Length: 403
Image (tube, rainbow, N blue to C red):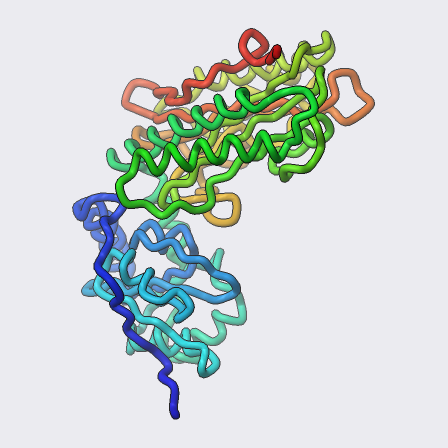
């Protein structure tokens, strides 16, 4: 029996999309206008974030490639047979083509079915690996491959009103996760137990808020003691002790959209040395909140905040940029790298952008006040300034947790 290279699996009915039909139409129109202006016949997206942004489908790779083919007339998702009809149910677009495992490189067969010919093809230079790029060239030997990753990133930086609503829900749900961390926190509580309690609270809040949503990837990093030295350190079995420095990090994921809450906490009491470090980081955080406004340049914000750390002789302990954009991103995909509050980013803030303010310093073990300090708020840039949509309190007045 000759097994097929591709399939159509229209199983069930289409689900309610995350955003309105008008929202996706606007995204497609902006993309197609760029393709037309650059004489690009089609875009072949391969990244989680762009496939999700343009089709509402968030794939689960497990070592298999996925794609979204966009022309002036069609939008076709390419998915693996292991996913059944879920990609078709989720895709906002013209079609979904499923490739099978029965022959090697059926993925490219499916792409070629969606795009039989093209002279100029837009791809994501920052995502498509060399092996698959070579295979794509073999399928389209006469086509020129051009980068669409950077212009699409710039399009995604300005969030729509519907995206703002989504991000507001995410910020609110992150605050629920933060409250759950405090609720579960106690002497000798393992990090993972505190984190589990917060994650469950956020998942339930997402389910209560959205009628038909895929529940995946929401997580909590709750770090204590030495584990606070890295912003992305995983949860461990370490048990919390009175006097420990703690990092609360809650990340609700809603249909591919990331939001975050991050706070420094102490259990029981905070030493004088730790208090000095914490207050300095809070000073930078509050100054940064005031600097986020339309017309501000990312690099200028970073340089101004550096001066505060320098006055405290703490600049050498700063660990990363002061903030970043939000949208379709996660701990394993995405990132609008052109909108980060760093010295090497000259992007000017505009109304509609959404950015965090999140200074962090880390003093190594053995120094007075050792540990990692981080506060994180989400701000929506508007015409006159910025609105802080994070409500969870920060600083020593609120987050020395006494139980």
